[in-house]
Image (cartoon, rainbow, N blue to C red):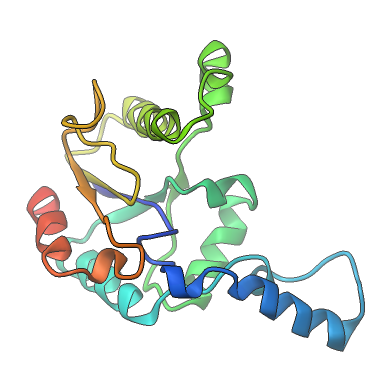
Length: 183
């Protein structure tokens, strides 16, 4: 089994997309009134269409599935996120969400409050998902948070950083780095 651990913000939801949910929600509320429930398209920012194209190419070329490691997992169920990704043009739905640190390490969860701690928390969540799924043969985590061994100790061996939040996964050379881990 091949798995790509996918963050959203700074990877497929780029900086020029941030805040689009507020505009969509205002438009929806003007049309429908202030009803309590609204669909997934109004709850999250848009994905970048070129970033989705690159993601789809990676999924097609490798046959990999993907797991959501983004903190978006805290604001929707897997089923809701599956529908959203398909709605936004991803060719297949995510197969899972990484577990939340607080659900498997209650002591550690209280310690993570700063950015580098958030990086460590996400790293631990990915490692826990891998521990629970030993059938994974190839994997890579893609994120704008730096979870590399050079940055964290211990970090992730199979990690690709997307340092430019306005380019994300479509940044030159990123796709090739991801493919090296999945092929």
